[in-house]
Amino acid sequence: MKRSSGVAGTVAVGLSVVVVALSAEAQVTGFRSTVVDNAAGGPPLAGFVTNDITADFSGQLTGFQAVLQLDTGSVRIDPFLDPLAPPPGTVLPFLPTVEFGSFLTLGGPTLETSVVEPSVPGGAVNLGADRFVQFDADGINAAWNPPGAVPIFGQSDFLAARITLSDDAEGTFRFLGATVSTLTPFDAVPVSNGVIFPEPGLLAAFALLGPSTLCRRPRH
Image (cartoon, rainbow, N blue to C red; front, side):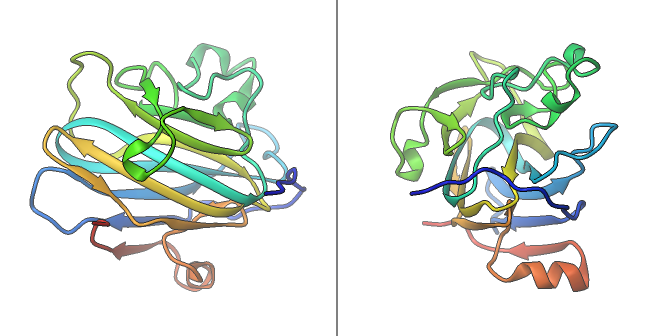
């Protein structure tokens, strides 16, 4: 499919949407997509929208999987950043836009604020994707987890990834969270104008109502 580069434009910030799984069992109970300000203390990244993907979970986390498929637009990959891990905070004063590249993480937007640097062993096979990792301008297919025996227990708004998209990006995003006892895949959600949404047509609702919370059972 053809993908084009980003174009200049402005974006709304602070939009937040939630997809949750209705269950008392220890599991990843929901994930949130929030549009964040990508100004980095200066002018915003023209033509790009930054989405933070956060998760709520109970019990011990064993990892996440995600697939981003784009029909148009692109993923912003910072040339100074390895997208399979968050950036070191020490470089941000010198390379501020690195903070708003696209990357996987386990808890924070920098290596210092993350619980641990993620291990990325392969693709999102539990979402039906290829076993090989992809994280480039065309899309994302990745599984990441705490390396070794590093324990991460019950968290809310736990940062799993930052995904910056061109503001013409259209496609779908799929997400899965795993604890020691449960794999929880969520239904695919649409990407529109660079924003990861939980339901088609919510842009008008956001404009009128502000942030919304949606309840949805996990996909079986």
